[in-house]
Amino acid sequence: MSKKVYEALNWASSFLEEHGRDQNAGELLLRHYTNQSRAMLLASLQDVLSPEVFEEFSNAVHLHAEGKPIQYIMGYEEFYGRTFSVNEEVLIPRPETEELVYGMLNRIHTFFEGTKELDLIDVGTGSGAIAITLKLEKPTLNVIASDIANESLEVARNNADKLQADVEFVHGDLLKPFIESGRKFDIVISNPPYIPVGDMESMSVVVKDYEPHRALFAGEDGLNIYKQFMIELPQVIKEKAIVAFEVGFGQSQAVSELLQQAFPQAKVEVVYDINGKDRMVFAEIE
Image 1 (tube, rainbow, N blue to C red):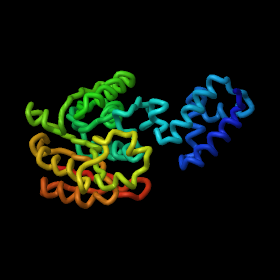
Image 2 (image 1 turned 60 degrees about the vertical axis):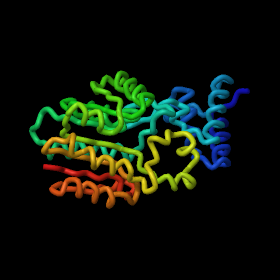
Image 3 (image 1 turned 90 degrees about the horizontal axis):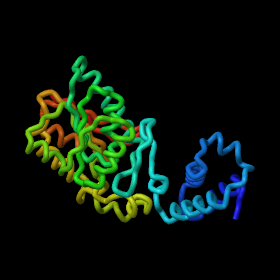
Image 4 (image 1 turned 90 degrees about the vertical axis):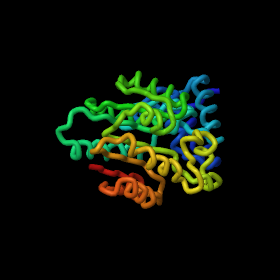
């Protein structure tokens, strides 16, 4: 069965709306299956889609209606102007995390002014988006990325190869491998699991049924990983260091207090994201 581009878009839009999904997903999926930019797609609204392309597109729209994120259907997501491969083993990179990276680059520039070689660890790297972006934006950094899941590290390694980023990958739980090996870092950055387990019921199917739970949930209050970090961080950071976390909405005060207790001399700062949510906590330690 063949359809014109505009007919396929109209069908997808109303079908997704009926199923409580974002109508714009139809356009993104059709661009993926026709390999077209938005301008190209809009210029070809009267063109007829081949039956094969329409079938692939239709199957994808049905999958998304059931809840599967379009990034997993397409196999990629854009982050900081680059394309990262993603699958169900990794969290889909979010725009808020781009702000974490941007904030870190600015702080490296001011806090470590003139310092050439800096050792940075991205803990719980997932797709590798944070580590790879920081390495490509600031090539003088020595970047290490760790994750507890080998499946996630495989995705991150592939992304590093594809984007030609010289990042070292280490398998292990939080900072334990580095405590054992005695490695020290100037910069520790992490977007750890921070959702309280009790929030699972109210979450979108798109997130809770498809994205890896190990990357989402962290105990009753969502603070388990941050608390573990405070035990491990003092053992791996150098005398002058930056620590940066992404946090859940409303968690910044608790995380700030944890950092201040662990590092009484630190300058701790909460940063709000573009949507006005307390999303990042930075600590400058010296």
